[in-house]
Each structure stands twice: as structure tokens, then as C-alpha cells.
Image (cartoon, rainbow, N blue to C red; front, side, top):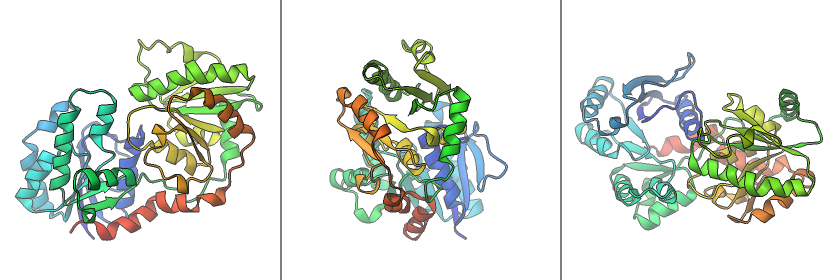
Length: 373
């Protein structure tokens, strides 16, 4: 069995975000076919049934990204265990990946989650040009690069002259291969938990509020969408999951009142998604694939999203489950929500291609033969 060493540069267990679940799902699937060891930070909480070994060799400090002692640590680990392949999450440790490759000649896969500089540019970080140059360089030195979306791969090929033969498709994955059959039970449980009457639709907003794009998206719901829904006399609740709203946030008290239900961080997020009539994703910036959309569709809950929020997700395989509105067209949200909740039927059979593309077992079947030797 192939021996693989992966480096996840930050806390990801237990998974609390889409990015965490992307790493966790990939490692769980990969560990079924390889002997996997993961280097990560010391603040991970490892479950007893974790199918791979986790070594807490990275500090929790931001200075870990410039820790030159890691070169010898990883080199010695490779020499003792004779790994066949290295996998690095994100380009941040590309400098170290390059040095370790020189020391060991072991090929490495750079696994991207998005084009990082684009995300930070959209967040108006002044240092994004430096990250762009560094990220471009990291793509040039990697033996293979994986992409979460076709759009990211096309960008790398067209703009940074990356050879298509070095590109691997690893989309965000889900574990189920069909819509769960217990959606009705989940709906009843969440309605009972929060005393939501049957005649009120459940509109779900899911995302940590300490991330600015998520917080601004919820602000748009509060300022534009909810008032419009109320004027049309639509009965609803906005169920908010994710937590971590800053204490100084001006809408902190607002979301603690009707028609909002602030659930905070919830461990059983799938149950909340299945219970919802519609997932709202009005993000206007931040970049990258919004994994919450993929998860929601896989659980049989339709999505209403901005065009920016739908970046990287193939409309051709989502059927009627993903519906988009142009960024900033807030006047369209309320009538579209009412239409989707009351009038649109969603067909499970239209998702065959969706599950083939996004199921982890299907992804691993496609990826294993093309990993670098």
C-alpha cells in the first residue's frame, strides 16, 4: 500500500467550516486506499476512530509558516518511514515543500482550495500582489496541482502557463450518493427545537460570522431581503448557523429577535440543512467554491445564491437545486424566495451527475491513478 505524508497547516479537526470538511473528507477517503500520515497543528482534536495518523509537529503560532526547523524534521520523518508521496494543503508552505523535495526527491502534490490571491484581493488586502507572485511560483515548482473547480484550473493553465498534464481535479466531496430519506424527520425535529410553526418557511443562513464576507451577506439579508419578505406577508424564520459574531457588530442584537433564530455553531449542521426549505447564500466577495452549496444540494435542500456565491459550481449538474441572482439585485430576492418555497418542484433524479461528480468515493477512484509517482 502506498505511503503518503500530508501537511495540513492549521487546525481542521473537528471540522468547523467548509474548508475543514474539504480536508477531513479528502483524508478520510484517501486513508481507505493508502497508509496516510498527516502533519498538522497541536490544537486538533483527534477522534478515536480516525483512519490516519496525525502528528502535531506544527505550532499554533502564525510563525509556523516561517519555521525553518521543519525542514530537518520532515526530511528525517521521510527517511525513517519511506513515504512515496507528499501532499501540501494550500501554497503557504511552498518554500518548505521546495526544500524538502530537494532533500528527498519525493514528488509532491500541491492541493489548492481556491486561487488564494484572488480571495484576498476581493477582501482588499494590500499585500495580495505579493501573494500572487508567491502563489504563481508555488504552481511552477509542484509536481502536480489539484484544483477544487474547473474555473481555478482554467485560470492556472491560461494565466500561469501550468501544464494541463500536471493538473488534477479534486472537487469538494460529500459522503452520500443520494438525497437522504429522513428530511421530513429533520424538519420536524428542528421545528420542535425552535418552536417554528408548520406554516412558516425555514430559510437557512450558514457560515461563521467572524468571516467578513459571511457577515456582510447576512447584513444584506437583514437590510434588504427580510423587509421585502415582510411587506409581501410571507411567514418565515431566518435560521442562522455558524456563530462567532463580533461583539462590536451592529446587528448582533438584531439577529436575536424575530424573525431570526441565532443557533450559533451547531455540531449537527446536516440536520439543520435538511430541515430548511431553502439555503440563502448572498455573498458578494471572498472567492472560492462555496462548499455549503454542494452540501445543501446533496442533502436535498435547494439554494438561492448570488452569482459570486455560485463560482466554481457547474450549473449543468445541479438541476433545479441551485438558483442564482446577479450580485446586488436585492429586489429579486424576496419574490424568488417565495417562488422557490411555494411553487418549484425539485427532482432527485436530476442529480445523478451531481453525485457522480461530488461523491468522495467516486472522486478517489478518479484521483488515485493520476497522483504523482
